[in-house]
Length: 72
Length: 67
Ligand SMILES: [Cu+2]
Ligand SMILES: [Cu+2]
Image (cartoon, rainbow over all chains, first blue to last red; front, side):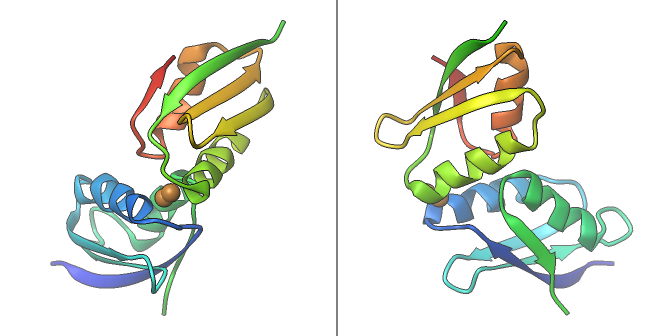
C-alpha cells in the first residue's frame, strides 16, 4: 500500500537540484512516484512505508547535500 | 601526506556547489575544498584516496568523474 508524504527540502537553488532528487529517489525501491517543487522547497513522494520509511526518504535527500524534514 | 584531487562535477549554480560542499563535509579527513562552478571543477585536498572522495561526491546524484 502506497501513501503520499511531503518533505521540506532546504538548499535547492536550481532545477537541476530538483531533477537530481527526482532521479535519485525515483529509482529507489519502495518509491512509486516523486515530484520535487523548487519554489515550494518541497518533495512530494508516493512511497510504500513498509519498504522505504518516510524518515529514510528524508535521510536519502540529506545525504545528497540538502536539509530535509518530513512534514506533518 | 595530502594530495589535491580534481574532479569534474556537473554543477550549474552556487546551490549545486553548496550541496557538494555539504556532502564532502560529512567525510572525515578532508583538508580543503575548492569549487569552481564555471569550470565545473571541485578540488579536494586530502590524505584520502581519489576513489573514496569520488564515491562521496557521487552521493549528490550529480555526474562526477576524476579529472
Ligand atoms: Cu542546483
Ligand atoms: Cu545549481
